Length: 215
Length: 259
Image 1 (tube, rainbow over the protein chains, first blue to last red):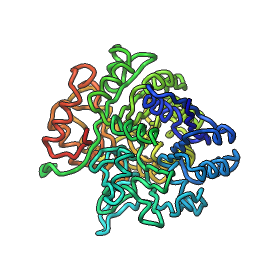
Image 2: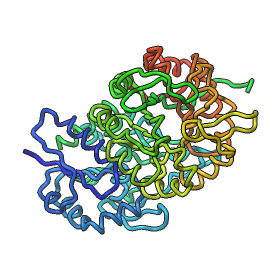
Image 3: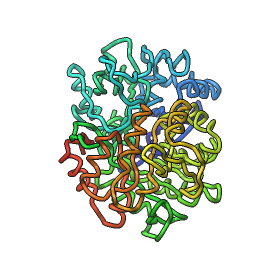
Image 4: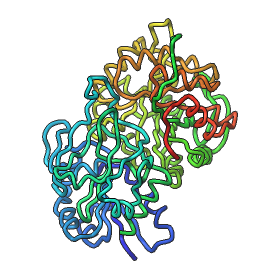
């Protein structure tokens, strides 16, 4: 029996993520739990950091629940770790959301506002909400196939901030918003981050989650 | 309003389900008229037809100061994997937390925010502004003045919609569910002046709700600034398939989700 743990740090649409993961592993021998226990996190085969909320709050909750080290240790164990939306952003080194804050620093980079104007000064809506077609990077194609990330696939985004990795190589997918490219997926080894919500992206999203469970 | 041409704009197509107790109901001018059925069954149907999101509003919750949608949301979230917005009777951070734990992704708040604007700030700081949908029930008095109503269009507030949406955006609202009390349930088209007015005042996305009757209504609402459209009776009563609504949107070159 394999164990998936969804980290409960008091924020996030935990139930939605759990439902979607359970739906995905219907026929597979996997157990899905919501937990904030360091020992369960350590024993898990897969770790998921969900996310709905604000960066500062998230990091504060993770630290006050003594979860920072267990998550970092899990990441260095080489087992698959998935951050979703805010859960992806906290993988970064720092964030500029409501002030300067330190992240988990698992993938070097910073979190910045997506900006409410295009380069020609025309306005665009923030938060960016809706179904966007993602652009998948060519050079990481084989890996992206195994993640079920495909060009022009429509997935659901809702965010005002984005993860800008220091190393371009860690960015594996993006989408176009106005005239800007926005980060959609980052990856460094066993650590994966999705800005979109696979648990809210219908059939496409379920396929993407299923691929994560096959890692 | 005369020179509107169809444009390559994106829009979300949303199913709105108004509930009273455990039932999906038909509402006119936001008043519940009759029982239609089990909301989670309808939700499941719209999900499989390609709805982009769902909105649940408990029409009587506000009256009793409670939100009892958690069960319906929980049941729905088991097999519906698109965003779910839930509203009705949300008064506090605890109410928001309970709905999110049940499987909601966003909360829509009207009365609670009018009574206590600080709630907008509290919700957006704790859960992010994308989670905080300001629900606005607007009643038209003139081409330039819409009044904010609360408690499912039962209470007038004297607040100008134009002032309220600007204030709410500053406080951290991430989206506006804009319901025209006058048009709701009438199938006479959206209140396009209202959509245009609000759209010019704020940068956050607007979900237009109330009044869909004919294909051109979709084009008009999107042209004047709606980022998403909510459909109710046309789905629940007239049994229109979401796939047909998608076709209509595509026929006006509106950029919608690829299924």
